[in-house]
Image (cartoon, rainbow, N blue to C red; front, side):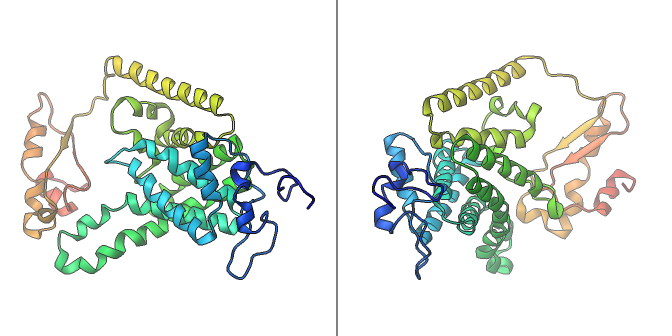
Length: 341
C-alpha cells in the first residue's frame, strides 16, 4: 500500500479513533493470522466511530485489544450490563456496555471472532443477571452445595447463545445507524425467541431495566416489553454514532416522548376491569417452608377461600398464587377448592 492513511479491505480510510492503534498490532487487518492468533486491528468493518475524545480513547483501546483480551473485555462489559437489570436498575451502565461491545465487534477481523465476542458478552450478561438461581439451592445447602458454582454458569452458557446472532448482524452491517439498528433488532428478536423456544426462558428482558418506577414502563402498554428492549438498545448505542448532536437530540426526544406518554397514561382514571372476582394471594411462604411435605396443604387452605366467599353477591371466582410462593399440587388445591381443575 502506498503512503498515506491506512485503508480497509474495501479501500476506505480508517479514522484515527480506530487506526491509531494499528501500527503496534502489525498492519491493517488484511494479513493472515499469525501463529498466536493475532491480526491487525484496523478491521474492514471497524471504521465510523466519532465519539467524544474520552470515549474515543476507550473505543480505540478496545479496538486495539488482542483477541484474548478482547474476549475478556466483552465478558466484563456483559457483566457490567447486568447491573441495569432488576433489582439494581443501573440503566446508565448500558451507555458503556452496549457501545463497548459494538466497538469490539467493529474491530473483529472475522465473523467467527465476532461470534465469540457476542458469546462472551452474552455469557457475562446472563451470568450477572441469573445469580438468583442459586438461592433455591441454598435452602438445602447440605444436599445441593455442589450445584451452587455450576447452576448459574451452566444456564448462562446456554442463554449466551442468543447473543451470537445479534453480534453477527452488527459485524456484517456497516457502522452507524445501520449497525446499531441491526444489533438492536436482532437482539430483540432473539429475546422474543428465548421467551418461547424449548419451553421458554422469558426472564431478564432488557426492557425490564425501566421497571424501577411506573412512569417509564407505561410504553409497554403499546409496544410490549420487547419494544422497550429495542428502544433501550437504540438509546444505549448512541455514543457510537458519528453525528453525536443529532443522535443525542433524537434519543432525548424519544426519552421525553416515552416519559410524556407515561405521565399522560398515569394521570387518567384507572380503566374498569373485567367482571371477574379475583383474589391475589401473597402467601409469604419462606423458601425453606414451601418444600416441606407436611406444610404444603396448609399453604393453600383456608384464608384465600374465605376471602373469596366474603365478597358480596359472589359464590365462585378465581384465586391466584404467585408461582414461586408455593410448591403446590393439584391434590392440595383440590382439598379446599372442592373440585379438580
